[in-house]
Length: 120
Image 1 (cartoon, one colour):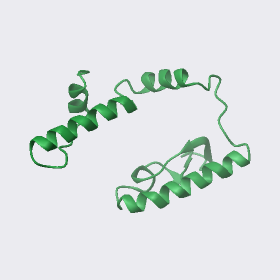
Image 2 (image 1 turned 90 degrees about the vertical axis):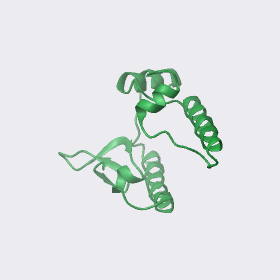
Image 3 (image 1 turned 60 degrees about the vertical axis):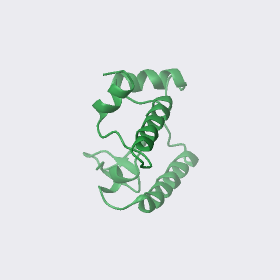
Image 4 (image 1 turned 45 degrees about the vertical axis):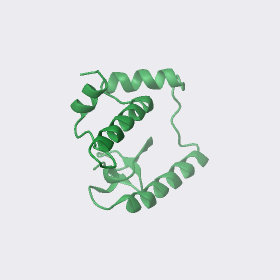
């Protein structure tokens, strides 16, 4: 769980919101609830994001472009999964499920997903 107030991530030392940092779902409230519980969490967080935007409390990155974001994510988390990766994994899970007469068979670890994508 990440320390937060209504989805705004808080600095653990000052208890003040970290500008531009938000959370929702289990990482916001801990591992409890269901999909229906996550939806109100997300709405609460998005309302805070819109409120902060209206008050000019936003990040101002030096390079606000997709390439810069991709570089940052790759530097911080080399084993990230892109949307294209997710689409491929989704297709594989559905195919694996079909082979077993089930809706899908999920990958259960990051290592397994990386291997399936040929990135092990």
